[in-house]
Every structure is written in C-alpha cells, then in structure tokens.
Amino acid sequence: MGCSVPSLLLHLFSLIMFLVFNPPCVCGNVEDDELKSLLDLKAALDPDNTYLSSWTMNGNPCGGGSFEGVACNDQGQVANISLQGKGLSGKLSSSIAGLKHLTGLYLHYNSLSGDIPKEIANLTQLSDLYLNVNHLSGEIPSEIGKMENLQVLQLCYNQLTGSIPTQLGDLKKLSVLALQSNQLTGAIPASLGDLGMLMRLDLSSNQLFGSIPSRLADVTSLQVLDVHNNTLSGNVPPGNNDLLMVILICWCC
Ligand SMILES: *[C@@H]1O[C@H](CO)[C@@H](O)[C@H](O)[C@H]1NC(C)=O
Ligand SMILES: *[C@@H]1O[C@H](CO)[C@@H](O)[C@H](O)[C@H]1NC(C)=O
Ligand SMILES: *[C@@H]1O[C@H](CO)[C@@H](O)[C@H](O)[C@H]1NC(C)=O
Image 1 (spheres, protein in one colour):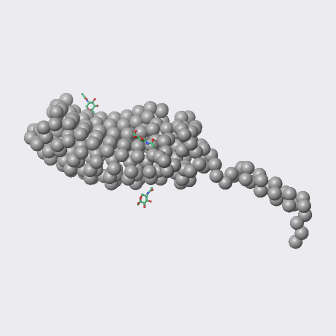
Image 2 (tube, helix red, strand yellow):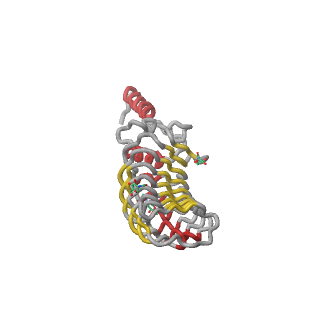
Image 3 (cartoon, helix red, strand yellow):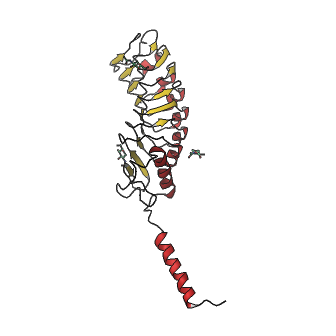
C-alpha cells in the first residue's frame, strides 16, 4: 500500500490541526470531572450566561481567579465558591455533588429558586453553607444530617416548607443554624439538643408549633436562641446554660 508524499503531508497537516484545536492539556491541574461539575452547575445557576461568563470549557478554574468566585486549594481542587449577591436567578443543581473537596459554598443574596438538591449531602468536607436570602422552596433534605464537617448552615429568608429534619441533630460541629423566615412547620426537634457546639439558633418567623424542647436549654455553648414569631406554647425550659443570653419569645405576634 503506497503512501504518496502529498497524502503523507495531508496526514501530517491533519495531525497538526488536530493538536492545535485539541491541545493535549490546557486544563491546568484541576480535575476534569470538577470542571464538568462546575460547567453543569453554571448552566443551572446562570441559565442566561449573564454573570458567570468567565466559567468556560477551555478555562482553568484554578488559574488564579479566572473563574469568578472559584478558589482552589493547593492540590488544585475546587475549595470555595463565593458568588453572593451576583444576581443569579437559576437553580442549584445536583452536580454540586461532584465538587467533593468543597469547603465553602456562598450563594446567599441571589434569586435562586427550586429545591435544595439532596445530593449536596455528598459534600462531606463542606463547613460553610450559605444559601440564605434566595427563593428556595421545598423541604430541607434530611440527608444534610450526613455533612459531618458542617459548621454554619444558613438557609434563612427562603420559602422552605416541611418540618426541620431531626437528622440535623447529627451535625456535631455545627455552630450556627439559621432557618428564620421560611415556612417551616411542625415541632422543634429535640435532637437539636445534641448539637454540642451550637452557638446561635434562629428559628424565628416560621410556623413552628409545640413546646421548646428542654434539651435545648442544656446546650452549654448556645448563646442566642431566637424563636419569636412562631406558634409555640409552654414555658422556656430551665437549663444549665449560663451563657444563654438572649431568648426572644413572642407567643402571639
Ligand atoms: C475558603 O474559604 C475559607 C473561609 O472564608 C477560607 O478560610 C479558606 O482559606 C478558603 N480556601 C481557599 C482555598 O481559598
Ligand atoms: C454520593 O455519594 C454516594 C456514596 O458515596 C455515591 O454512590 C453517589 O454516586 C454520590 N452522588 C453524587 C451525585 O455524586
Ligand atoms: C412573622 O412571620 C411571618 C412568616 O411566617 C412573616 O411574614 C412576618 O413578617 C413575621 N412577622 C414579624 C413581626 O416578624
């Protein structure tokens, strides 16, 4: 089988063009699956590609701020996403679960709607989750109870419904739980009394009913407990907590 010179040149040319348009690696050291997760996330968060146009298929998320709001750790893994107040009006997609090394997710003060995907619970490194002041609806996924490193959970000022999952009592490192100004119903789970590092608990302006679990008053780290503007009944339980300085309770408003 002969291979003439022009045909050889043609093959060489094709190879060069292939390499030009498909460079073997312009991806820096970010893991390819993380890039894919970011692009899937962007498509949902910013469907019109208005605010996250710097997140591109050929870009490098860990290339020193080239992906707006994305910060990576020393291993070239996506560690933080900070997009608070960016006018995002889409949804939080389950592809967030692909960013396994994420420690901080800051999406507050946007106009995100839809549910909180239960897959978010796969982010077991996550310590800060800020989804407050959006239009999120649906229930708080009980799976969040598996996020063992969570320290701050800010879900306030959304339209969340259903009851507070008892599994939140499994978040042993949680110091702030802010669920105020949603449409949460049901009783305050007694399991929140297991949150041994909890400093601030705000459940105000929901539709919670029943009594305040007495175990809450024994959380010695708790400094602020705000339950005003619910339909709670009974007395503030006496506890062993000298630090608990502010208890705001309004039975009727
Ligand atoms: C992620 O955010 C946290 C909290 O602001 C900060 O301490 C940490 O250094 C950030 N990590 C990276 C890799 O930027
Ligand atoms: C979440 O984690 C489980 C178990 O580690 C895994 O089987 C599943 O595929 C993960 N889900 C996503 C969306 O990454
Ligand atoms: C009480 O909570 C409801 C939502 O449950 C809210 O609409 C209202 O503004 C709150 N009122 C006060 C006084 O905080």
